Structure formats: C-alpha cells, structure tokens
Figure 1 (cartoon, rainbow, N blue to C red):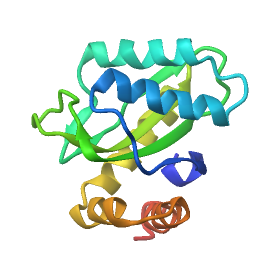
Figure 2 (cartoon, one colour):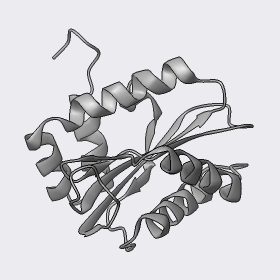
Figure 3 (cartoon, one colour):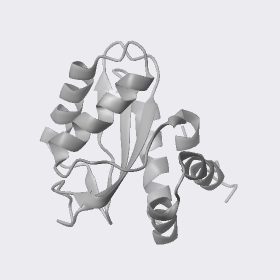
Length: 156
C-alpha cells in the first residue's frame, strides 16, 4: 500500500487555520467528510482522538500522521494538510507540526494500514521532501510530488 494509492487531490489542504491538536483533527476530518459521502464525522473524529490517547502521532521534524480505524469505512483514505504557522501537537520532539497526513482506515485493515504508515514515514524522512511540501503552492503540485516520490520499493 502506497500513499499514491489513497491520496486524492481533493483531500489536500494547503493552509490549515487550527493552532491546537484537537482543532486540527476536527478541521481535517471536516474537510474529508465534505469530500467523502457517508463518512461519519463524529465517529471519525472519535477514532482519531482514541488513537491519540494511546500516544502522539506527532513523529517529529514538523510531521504528524494522525490515524484511526472506523467501522463502515470500506477503503483507506488519506488527507494531507499543511500549516504555515504550525500546530501545538504534543509532538515527540516538542516542536510545532506543519505537515499532516491524516489516515482513515477500515476497522480490519491492519496490514494495509501499517504498510501505508511505513510508506508515508519513508517519504517524510527526507528533509528535501518536507521542504518541497512546505513550498509548493497548488494541490496539484503537491499531489504530483507525492506521486513521483512514492514509487514502489526497488524503483527509487
């Protein structure tokens, strides 16, 4: 499972307004619900908060990968968000978070979910990639960068 398989241009948010974790999760899940029919906003938000309760998904270097599993969801979806001002997110390195990859997954999708987390983490290890995500001005350009960067293993 690759990020390129589950991200859509419509799921890209370039100027998040929230400054706190819970506001950010609400802002992103609201956007995703506006794009996806039959996604239960309250249940999705609760799933994200439940996962955050286990430990922060702010992985450092200005990146967070909030994720949750939800009954009734039939496919994995990823919403990308960017905050220029940064969000207080209880990140592992205690720094503000600017780049978010929010994942909503079916309840029983452990293997695919883990592969996707690995794919996103691999991409975000690159400082150059993170810098490009912060500098691009259009959703189509971010989408193209991700598609070009997220090649199957062995194709880099």
